[in-house]
Image (cartoon, rainbow, N blue to C red; front, side):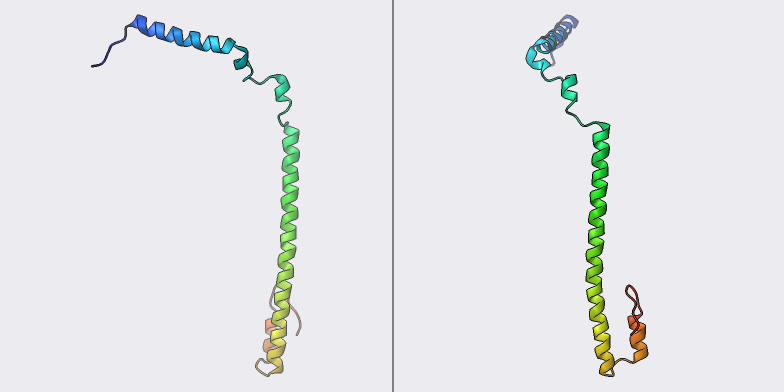
Length: 113
C-alpha cells in the first residue's frame, strides 16, 4: 500500500521546503545566529592559545618539581629509619659491621656506616 508521488508533487514539496528555509533565513532572529567580525574578536587568538599552552607547561613543570621534592623528603625519612635500624642491629650483634656497610651503601642515599 505504498502511495506513489508524482514528479510534480515532489518538485512542489522541494520548492516549499526551500521557500521555508529562505523565509526563515531572511528574518532578523535567524541572522543573529551568525557570528560577526565583532563576535570573532572575543575568541582566543593563536597568541592567546600559545601563552595558555606555555603557562600550562610551566604549571605542570612546577607541580612535578614540587612532587619530586616531596618524594625525596619522604625517602630521606625512610632512609634515616633504615640507618637507625641497621645501627640497632649492629649494637645488638645481630648484623656484622661489614653487612651494615653493604646495606647503608645502597642507593638512593648511600652512606658510610
